[in-house]
Length: 437
Image (cartoon, rainbow, N blue to C red):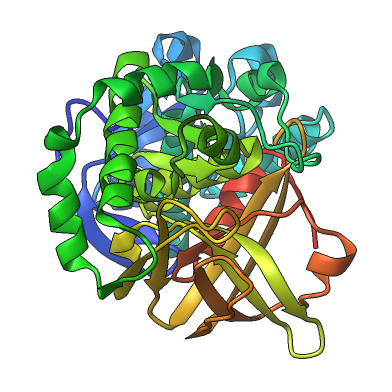
């Protein structure tokens, strides 16, 4: 994630999950100040001494006159500080330059709240997201931390390159994304990379180059079952090939057309994708454009890896689902078993044994990536059905599981540990996405 420059003091990052403040990094907030021309700058400062002093305990605060807001860049986090009443027309005059969404800060002094109410209504009437920060200072500061976290996550997505290695699997008829609209909306870029490039790079890597890495990974496994040592070497060669291409193409994430690759070189992507996710490179299966984007959003907001899976069994009465897939980052597991791939009964698959506890399920969908499903639940057990993909978990949902049967956003969904519903919902709502339930 992109970070701030010229940081000046330690502050506390508010996290939705814990509901308290953590000392973690420095943060700068720019207050674009709208004040009546009748008010001098010194009077504005003294009139709002209480809120400004409190903010400066946690942030580096820059007061920016509204006439100078043009010097701010898209990487600068900014709030609109309504310092007095009578500035409504002034805000309208600067409409095009206002940050989106427009967050109005008003402490009520000098008729500021009255003006903020009028301005917010006008902005929302023109389709702009707007919110007023007002009330108890502790709550205002917490809210600013949340907004700053969302802003940084959104900025970090801009310019990210997702490698589409091959094409989406033929059965993913509802999981496409429009490349142009995704770039306009989120700033991300999907980059097509032919599977032939991967096959060529794979052929250039020798068993000797990956022997030590293969042996080391095998030694960490709880067991090795159907897969052979030669399968391990081939799968590790694919991992090295993908890493080389990721570096050359400057990719931040990939989605791999796994089944077509098996047909081409006889190697599944399960091990390679597992290790890439462990190494901090977002990597998804089957060329699923929506799921890999969801995984990027999760990482941008939480910094956490996640599990891309099929909902394989659903019990609407008990609100339980079983999620399964043949790959997961081994660092997300308590233990793992090296298996073969379920559908093809070949190469390498990963059976992860996952810890129980709170989880979040999320999926961004729609060709414009403007819809999402979001819920929380409890991972209650690891299952071991013989007719499913290798990694399997049962999750008791906190919302009705009938969503999956009545209104699903496609097949694959993304699971991560912990309760991140508030954080993810805030981010997606601020980006004008529609929640599907």
